[in-house]
Image (cartoon, rainbow, N blue to C red):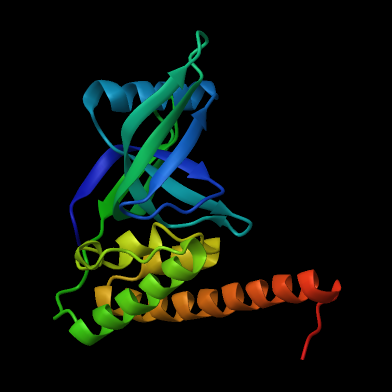
Length: 207
């Protein structure tokens, strides 16, 4: 087991956050105003947990407040939070003015990083970015990016992001990411072909 913490602030949301991902948040409920105030005062993390249609997920991502964008007189605010590390909820707590729990921070299992997997993920990721933006990432930047760094810049579905967060193996995340990136490349290529056909004759043909 990893280190455990009690009284850890929890923010159930309809999103999944990943380590290194920057998440914009609008804070307006009184309980979350109180939560943010405590986090700012003590410079502590809080946890974003996906509140899915099936209920609150057990594994979430700790986040730190990186910037307060603006704050209204009534305490409402817009802020940027950055994901830091995954955790598992061990028990919910109801004795604080905001949602909280006892959590265990999760570490990856010890394993040797598969360099071929990493290189393949980097290559497919670079191709996806280039196809979407017409700019290929710098090689020096790619070499610093792990699975979470790459995934944090791509708008995957929530199930896919939660699947990445649940995995305790960097090699396993790289394998999953490579499949997700390849699928995204195919969808993007199809969308581009469809747009081109629509421009040419007003129709999109399938098959």
